[in-house]
Length: 189
Image 1 (cartoon, rainbow, N blue to C red):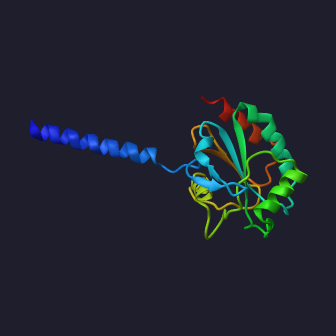
Image 2 (cartoon, rainbow, N blue to C red):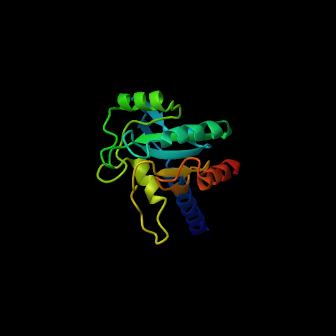
Image 3 (tube, helix red, strand yellow):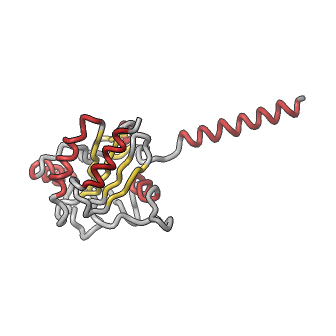
């Protein structure tokens, strides 16, 4: 009888440890980063929302997407949608400015009101954990993990905190497939 109790207790401990490990699983909405003003930005506050992470740049041919991103944010914000702009300088050095210069550019030229993070690395050595998690969650059809390809690549995260979709840099904010994916995630319980 003692052996049965010991086995049951051991199984319970193993189950509890597994549950705790799953609770601590790293998702795109885990951890804290700095926002564009240098303040802590707790990604967990986005849980329960649909989030579009976009690595942005001020001197790119795709920079006019800021206008469409702002319109997209305004269109779905009331439904629980958030865009998070993530400045990065890995692609053609097209985001050379400081955080304050980036903020001035985005708010001045494109009237951006969605959250913006501090400039980080989204590809290669020193990649921020957020982007490491995003790319690992979106392997290609052959199961290969692909780096971010250029400025304005988009990662859609559902209310459950899991990456729901990844869109190429050339996918415009008004694109049907992007909007359908956002609506589908917003409709989920």
